[in-house]
Length: 226
Image 1 (tube, one colour):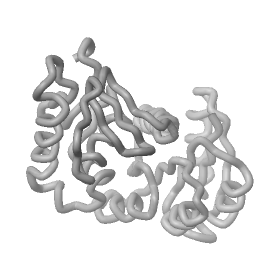
Image 2 (cartoon, one colour):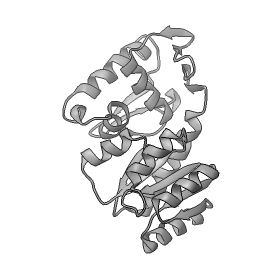
Image 3 (cartoon, one colour):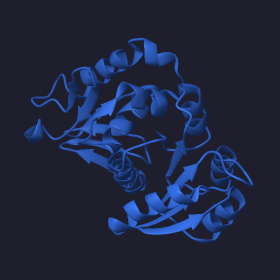
């Protein structure tokens, strides 16, 4: 796996690169936004780790330009800013995840693994857990061969759960990645939509696939690991 690390602070860049190379990732460095844009255009990467405050052009601007150029590589934004507004802004510009500095190396590596998995899953035509199938090309969903009709929001939420199958996703993660705004963070909107989906994919089947993790969020996983 090849990763582009865009970070202008030399000590932080060296720290992150060392952590990644110890896990046998290949890491290229860029110290400003303009240089990173050129590198991302000429070299296919599996992941881009991108600081927001950069010389040349900001991480926000670089993220936006990469998406305008149809470069779909997963992007992990890094920033000392931890407000929901900044996180949502980055995600709306095309980033896939957001990590606040300072962070523990274990969390960085966990997010890298998740994004690399997500990048592979995003390219799969069909997402599947047990007998639940979601076709990303036709947007058709079935369980045990039975067609399931979903609204656009229900489809987006189920797709997000399937991309992260076997992983706990928090309500904040769902808010940021499915809603893209902060209005749902303080309401029961997410819980309501989870219940909508459960009624459609779990209620008439022996083994439920969506499980609530108390005080945390949800997980969609195989019945034998529930």
